[in-house]
Image (tube, rainbow, N blue to C red; front, side, top):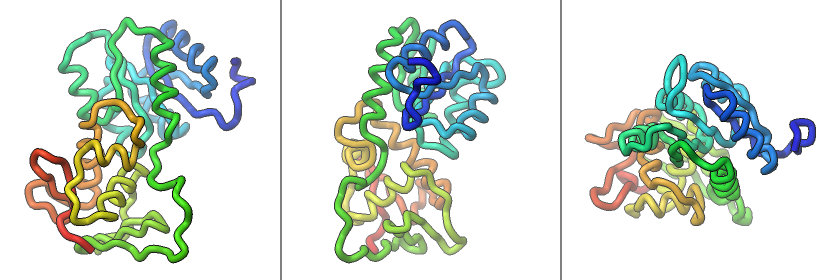
Length: 243
């Protein structure tokens, strides 16, 4: 499928790799898979493109000019919850752990099959990260949830504190809303993934930790002395107090 033939509703994929020939090959397979694909080749350009394009998925090489894929991932996670597949030429556990700790969703070591990239992209985007979009609208709108000075409005999809409205990504809001819906429950990472990413999601479950970390930072919450989100040792996460 050529760029001109790409449907207007196609998911947007940003391929970031300084090996232009490899990037073009991956992009060509993704375009044939029905995606709207854009390419860039260095760290700063990748972050700028992510802001401008708001992609659904980033295929991100670890080693880049400017700054590396780890830093790209860290910066992108401050404003976007798009899916990120990290690519690396070194099949080392440390690379995988660093990438996932910054919020990457999946990991592929070079050399890899471009068909595998397409398959993983299709699996990720088959079920968008949205909480409750298929549920029928309730007859009575639910009241906002309150956790201390934090107010979570599931209808308006807003979160406010004493300092005003908090700017959350979709995934951050959905994680908080999932926990607020059952405020006494201790959620495992898998349960939160099922609620926010969907039951057919595959990838490293510790991606939840990254989004919880960003969420805590935006709420001014400390893991050591939590006011909103508590860590449940050996289980996962929950709220400090009910509504």
